Image 1 (tube, helix red, strand yellow):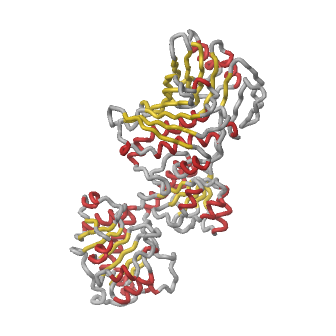
Image 2: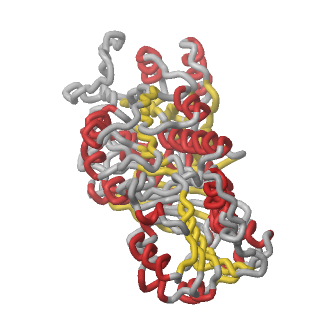
Image 3: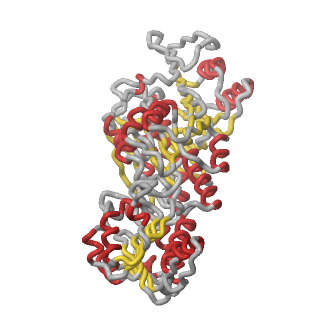
Length: 592
């Protein structure tokens, strides 16, 4: 991963006439320039084009509009696996519901272009997460928008099953009046076992408590205090299924939960138990359920999901008189459909922008409140990585990076995986064609022989601020800007968050203070009057707006580092004039 090997960078070293020049666009407006007693470097990147999002299943109009405001949107429904693999190489993001299988072949066919898969809903068992992670593709879902709809449908099926609503309705419409045949059971005082105490399961529990039911739950990952807060007791799997009058399923489909409700599980249940499934069809062994219904162990079942959807028309389970079936309607309310569409569109657009996704399912899960707190530090981390790698002159390439975090918080209260991933992103992306995100950051670094070590400095102070500063050091490399080398021989940049915005506060051994917005010009100068004014006037004459300027020096009258933040990219002529300014010994232009 050598910085000099980048094909996306525009690099010009006037002090070395024999060195190659690489352009990201035809250099028609760039005059020839040679100067041997000073040096400067310019770094620029391509401006990305509009991304393409493939929507493979129907999505609410509000979500589509959000996508269209940011990307080119291709709505192609009912694609065969072959058609999907053909189209995917032209797409940066893919949005599906539950009907499209996003297999390993899809990721391989994308050729590395596919960056985000959005699942419009909660379950992601139709997406090959291992393949997504290997290919650096972020997978996001929409876990909150349809929570209430799914919970309401679960309660609706619970009540409909207990009171034989579907069967009685069909009987009346067939011209019959069989009141004695459809006597139901009451819910009050009965025990409901909620299997899976996540978002939907906990909402079902709340509503069941309102119906007067006793609610227990099994979920090996649920915190007991959260369950107790709504009057629910967490119990073992066997205790839950053996004591319940009603069982409501709300777990994901994983290798561990596949056919979890099989002959063995049904044999442990109370005779006459009633089961509701609005989770995933595969968690129930459907043949075992049919046997349990026929034997009377299970009195009734209400099913919204099936192993194969739609199920066969002659399915004995669907046609069973004691089964109430609906066609996967858990999220099918007008409000939920629009909510899911908006939630997944926002997640996909945010991911394409490089923002953090609280709903990422193949990356470290980061609670929304932690994301909010760390957001400015995440931006700081990526920009420090970008600055550091732009200062590398090439040679042996970047192999060793040290990141230092200074904080008053204990290590247990500060998870730095997020920050490390963004520093990796900042270092690798500017000098390669790889798209780096939370999913593949560590894998990508290892693959390129990049070793990132982390160190923490414990400070005394307030715990309110998660970090005081972040420092990034790159060892065993030469620098385009000699002053970026610290006293210890490493390229060093350091920054902190001020008023919610990332600031650069140190370059090499020089203290600076400039907001990391737009682009930067770093100048090493002899510390004498008038230099700041000359450079500022020069930029003004070129209509380049200066948003920040800071000077750090090691001693009066010696050397100083002038850091200038600019809103516009200076022309080559302006950069040439800066390089010719007396007392400026070297400078570098860095694009964030």
